[in-house]
Structure formats: C-alpha cells, structure tokens
Length: 125
Image 1: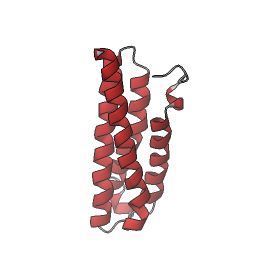
Image 2: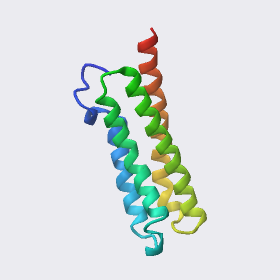
Image 3: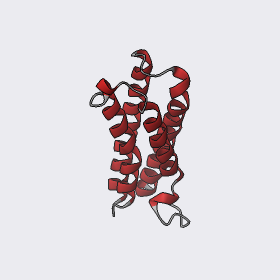
C-alpha cells in the first residue's frame, strides 16, 4: 500500500465496494417479501462481505493475511455476481436494474486481483 493510504477508507476498491452495497440494497428492496430470508438475504450478505473483508485485511499486520482477506472479498464478489444474475433469471429484477451492479462487481473483482498480485509481488520480491 502506498504512503498516501492512511486507512482502508482511502482504498478505491473499498469505496467502490461500498457503492456496490448501496446498489444491492436498492435492487433487493423491491424483491417479494417471501424472498426476504432467501436470495435477498444472500445478496445483501455477499455484498456487505466485500468491503468488510477488504477492511479486515487492511487491518492485519501480515501482508499474506491481507491477501487472504482480499481473496475472501473476491470470492464474495463472484458469489454476488452469480446471485445478481440469478435475480434476473428468476425475474426478481430486470437486467437494466442489475446492469450497473454487475459492471461494478466485475470492476471490483479486477481491482482485488490486481491488489492481491501487487501485495504478493512485494512479499516475494
């Protein structure tokens, strides 16, 4: 992490992940009430997991612990991407509703991979 990074809040990937949570809550807000403890809950938990794990990893004293939490965040982003696509397939949301969230998921996934690789290279180099 660069010297200009004073907190996990300074990480652009964390900021984008927080925006993703807001998107997911807005999308799932309109799901039927019988989905409250099913896909709605899964979507929300997966979305919250992304910035939470980025923050937790940042707070670790070991680079490899940080990388491990970034990998967990990445897994949650992939899970979320799948659940958003399921929302469309199950006709709980339209593709237009989830398009921005899906694009943000992919962007965050790429950023998490790049950050993990950068941290690993720093540890190995």
